[in-house]
Amino acid sequence: MGKNKLRKFTEIHTFPNVIQPDYRSDIKDFEYKGKWGCCFFENDNPIVLEIGCGKGEYTIGLAKEYPGKNFIGIDIKGDRIWHGAKNSIELGLKNTAFLRIQAEKIEQYFNENEVSEIWIPFPDPQPNKPRVKKRLTSPNFIERYKKILKPNSHIHLKTDNNTLFDYTLNVIKEHNHNIHKRSDNVHGDTENNLDPVVEKIQTYYEQMFTEEGAIIYYLKFSLNNS
Ligand SMILES: C[S@@+](CC[C@H](N)C(=O)[O-])C[C@H]1O[C@@H](n2cnc3c(N)ncnc32)[C@H](O)[C@@H]1O
Image (tube, rainbow, N blue to C red):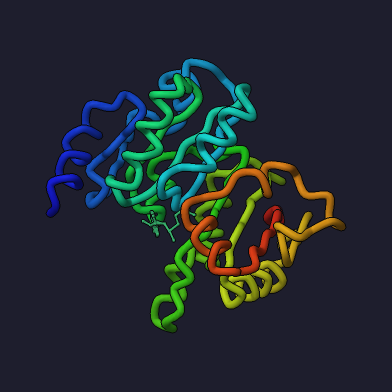
């Protein structure tokens, strides 16, 4: 491991806004499950997740935009989370946290109905067939989200990958979920009246793909209640 990565792994343990449970094991009684509001943020504001947050641009951007909500960035990679956590501390944001876990185990960390919204910016497209179920918008993951989301909550997806975009549209159609907003070109969209944060907040991957000339797709959807 490089010196820089090692420094980040050491430093991240001292950050008050990072929670790193033993994510390889099954956790039965995670201390903040059902208690994020009372016992971590010390308020009962809505809780919004950014899944696969990388450097946490949505967690931070939304936290600045909506001080009346709490934002939790989730990623498995500690050296990426380090960036978001460090920026948050420097910006004095009290409404952010970063949780280093595998999203596969998300129900071990949140109670039913504890979460009000989910953002999934630029998930890995997982192009190889055996890994399709690892896509963060696969039915497996959507079922997990359903268990922790309040009914009718919104899920937001941003991606440059048209295979992943079409795949997600199919999952939504097959499971009778509801699309509220769709853009096939976020940065050239004059028709769909997108929420300004969809265009304004740009992640590390988004900037990289946009510079390469990629088109950015966006979906806002909610899950069917049955
Ligand atoms: C392509 S990167 C995008 C990062 C960031 N959202 C952005 O747009 O810059 C995908 C991120 O998802 C994380 N990730 C992928 N699968 C995950 C999983 N099952 N659980 C937690 N994190 C995951 C990766 O570690 C990586 O940081």
